Length: 450
Image (tube, rainbow, N blue to C red; front, side, top):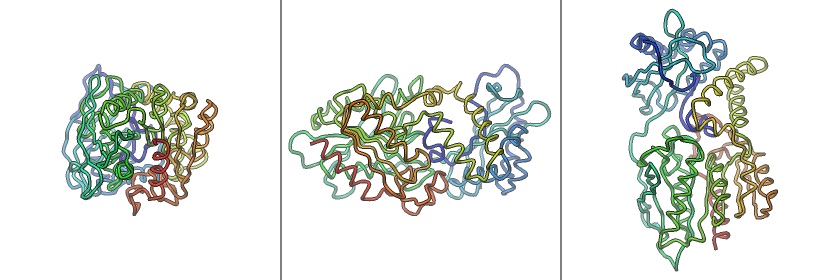
């Protein structure tokens, strides 16, 4: 689970039933046998033999993941790449049994996939205590096939400049859209992506056509506001990662981006705002609370709950959608918590996210705040918008506006059912935010950045 608190489903077409993060191994492991077993197992999935693939899973997996949930998870995991026509081994590495997992040998195997709908990578975690290797975890990540075009559209009343923001150990690449007709210095906004590796458009290969940050940049720059959007650490053209990657290190990136904008001759340093989506809705208050010069803050589907509570909700919701209920659901949720806690012990981002309570930080924000929320969001629930607003007001900030948009999901797409599954996100017919959402955002920022 890598920085995937809020887009647990939307970051990749994936099912993670794996045990923890890789740790040093102290014994010799037959990785070749693990690769052979993983390949044979993956071919069962290729053929749609889901029950056979479930029978080939480790006992601890079968005890906690019923066949129906297993089948739907595998189908979702494969949705972004489609029918697999080629599989090439990339790496196979043994690692020690993570905390809370059964003792035995563990091997993480990475394949490159060629699929009917796109290419990707496939991770299979194999485990055994005695006898043969069995599957303990599985993950599929789609791979972008071409570099996006970040240039301004023809005839746009703004320019799009490739820029870099540099801070200790990393260089962030991005695009700065700048209004062409300027009378003096202009206001500016930094856009802050949600969880999971995203480029400057907030795009994910798993959801072709969804580029909300490109829409926002276009809308705002047509209204006279400069916009800086960046590729995440280690994503796209950005280079380097913080030694300890947590939400705090991503906040450092945004602090550097604000300083970059204030140093631009075209930008009014007193009129710089932040707009964050999902995890970006955690980061924006962190930066604003420590920088009283931030002029305005927009939180799009930002959480008010702790990460542990968010993950509990998302996991329960996903298990229920897979057909679990009653005691079976409770058992699967308990098992997921054990695996999550084990992974958190070895993953700084997840440990920080699970422990973080957003409300004390929200109470320290003094800039005007717009809270935007989809009424059918199943990843950050609608009541959290009002909870965030109440916390901000409780700190003495009365300039808080809440906008809840009907039939709108976590990605701010029209969705009457409230999709919280990457395959269903990808299947939505319209991948663009509506003029109502973009207009509400732009109108509020134009007013606050005057």
